[in-house]
Image (tube, rainbow, N blue to C red; front, side):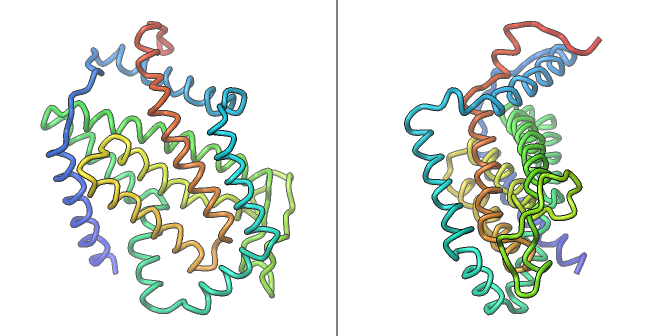
Length: 269
């Protein structure tokens, strides 16, 4: 199994990085190491602040998007969507869906593939003098840290039971806030990581289209795998995907790194 995973990963890594090299662009982030690190970390602080205060600055489109997400979550939780999807996934579960979950979805969501991918991209960016490839790796790293932290906080507050924790499964068991993480179904952390990674790559390399397609395909497989394995409800993976995607979008659209460069505010002495 380990040999098979490694072979699969080598194929995926080769596709991602080879396509990215053909699509590489210039980057504005060219600094001495010390200033580079200070501005990067400070930009992460600004990103986290923006994540917290974002609802106070949403426009009409963003509020409509939030309303759509809330409606979808409500339908999944309280109108039978979670139960129906869980029952369907378990009735269609087989050796093929388990193989996809174990060899593609889970490694992409538990951080194994993202760490290898982002680390390899950064090292390759150094070796080939590709600033854009390095910037993609660093932006995606910020997205992973902030989105994963957001998900962990919500998990500790919600304390929702996983599908396998009750017979029959019941999506309406919530225990929070008790901050113990004994019941940590909502949101899906694997799905958050997968969509944060996929979105970071896709936003850095929107063309050629094969890059976003590959990235989001792996994220979607991760989301399905969490339901296939009976680890999560549909509303868990929906919220995890939203957190991962919108965190990456915030980081790229706000571009706080550029703002941090102008403020010259070192935080490491």
